[in-house]
Length: 268
Image (cartoon, rainbow, N blue to C red; front, side, top):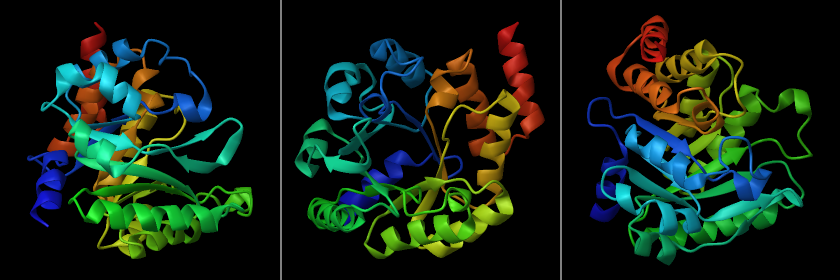
């Protein structure tokens, strides 16, 4: 499928082959969090700093993303949770919507270990089949944090590895999942999900900039395809500087210390 190959290549950084994505799709799922009240301002700050891709809902893409068309890859999120159904992602956009927007991939979330899992898996299977017809890569946010999963097991290799392997076997191209805390353990997840690519979810705001950079470095060392950050970008003191520092780590083998030096220099 040459269309899928072209879209996958557009998402990948030519220097490293990694994918650095910034997500701005949080509000429908979690409410209007601090830092994304002005969504056009967020899109402007993030896109102008040049991540490889951004993931967003259809409405943001239609209204806010046009100035950056062709400069940053667009990943359209086609499902969402809400504070009122926190484990049940519902399908809200179609593959045709993604094609019309010029997206390079379509993304769907899947809460593994929730009572609705059979419905969510069925939806994912339908999405994969639909996307295959038009050469659209499928990214699945596969998180083992359903109510049937013990809280102390959510970030384990066994749970994260299963969540990643399951969706690979359903035909997805890229798995976005929880970082397991170290390069060594996350490398096991990458192996379990192969040949699908694995990217780490940035998750909630980390305590320090050093923690953000260390996580990115660990993802690279694990052999993963990349990372997706949201709150750790647009809730940071300088989103553009953080993006530039992360790009050096993900694409140019910079160290955590070099990344911190970049942040310190830009804050002067």
